[in-house]
Length: 139
Image 1 (cartoon, rainbow, N blue to C red):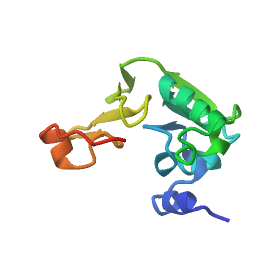
Image 2: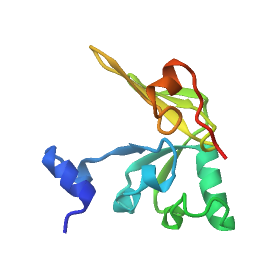
Image 3: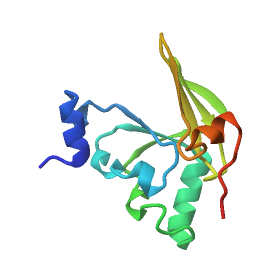
C-alpha cells in the first residue's frame, strides 16, 4: 500500500527509500506530518535544538497539544540537532534559526544557478510579511 507521500514521490520517479535527509522547519503537524513513514529507516532528520525540546515538552505537558503529533516523540528517529543560528547544511543550502511562531523554527535558503528560493515555513506566508516586514500576529 502506498502512502500519499509515497504516491507523490513515485510520480517524480522516487520512492520513500530514496530519501536520505529531511529538514524540519518546525514540527507542527501541518509541516511534519508524514514523518512516521521514515520510522526505522535511518533517514537523517534535521531539526533545531529548540524545536525538538519544545516539541517534547509540548507533548509531555499537553501544552500546545494538538499542534505536535505525540508519535513523533520517538528515539528510533535519526534526529540530527541543529544548534547554530545560521548553518550551511549542504552545498548551497543554508538554514536560519527564525524563532517566533515556534521556539525552534528554521527557514531555508536554497541557492540554484539561476535563482534562489527562501522557504520561510510560517515566518512569512504572504509577500507583504517578507517585503514590507509585516509580522504575523500570534496569540
